[in-house]
Length: 168
Image (cartoon, helix red, strand yellow):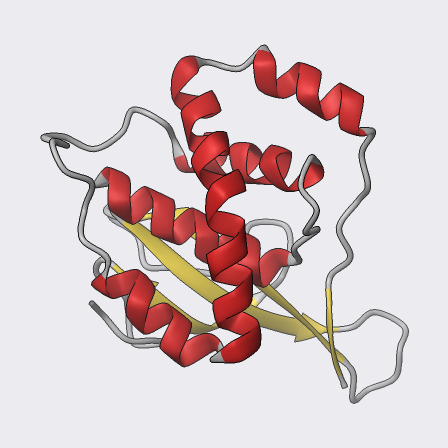
């Protein structure tokens, strides 16, 4: 049995306060995430993962972007999380990671999209957890299990992917 790792719920008013106290780059990223949540979620539901990844990877960088965004991958993850907290859609890790992957690629930031698994704690020997996340590329290290989470990558997409997945 595969199950998604649950996401914590947050007070929408507190989430809005955090969004509006963010930097301009983070606020713009969160606004793009809020708008982009619908097409990503709809594509996943109607087409599945592989076709959704294909159109995300086919999307061209934003016009007029001469250099990558100054927004870090960690800041991007927080911005996507904040956008979903005030959204009608709640989004699990897969659509959130796909959306973050899309936005970073459009901003010119080299990133990896990763799907990994781990054994579930205390739920029998056959159960596993699945998780999706985004990591920065080009740090001179191979893509590895997410720090502290014990997830082993099964699918790696994006810049300079290693042997566990495919490259762009």
